[in-house]
Length: 171
Image (cartoon, rainbow, N blue to C red; front, side, top):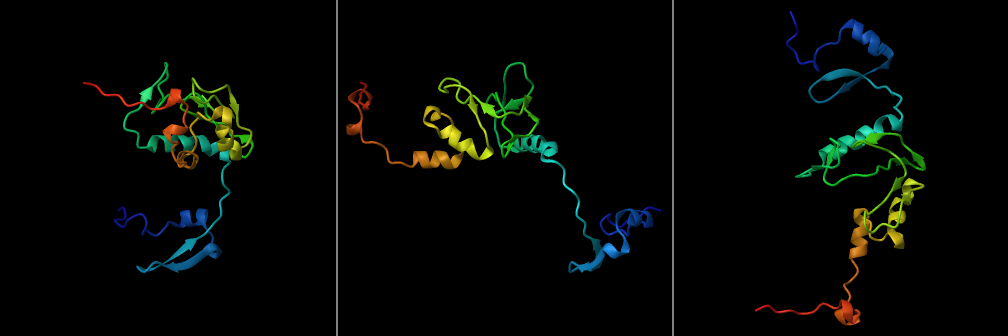
């Protein structure tokens, strides 16, 4: 007859104990409800390249985007069309695919205002490369936008006459 105890409270079978931990690896611990034995082990992690694209794809799916769109003949969906993917670990490109795009180290920035392809040599250079004067129309990470937008607005008298706001009335 199968056990009615929850799986977390069932005694492990002899075979599973032999596969999982030796008697010398077990430590006695308590959690307030009772005492039990645990085995603490270190497991070698997987390579970043094997995991990063999947992590990014899952993170994008969890974003609270009220309305997504498709572009071109792709089945992939996001809030805006995505044309490039940068996955860097230091200066190394991490191979992967997200939203149907292969990772690389280049972006094109704003489709009308960008002055050409932007190459990101190192992950630490990302914000600085986008903030360069010729690329100032590109979106920066939140901290960069906040600091750029925190400067006080210019007074109309300091603006050239052609760009000063004018008052209009309609009747």
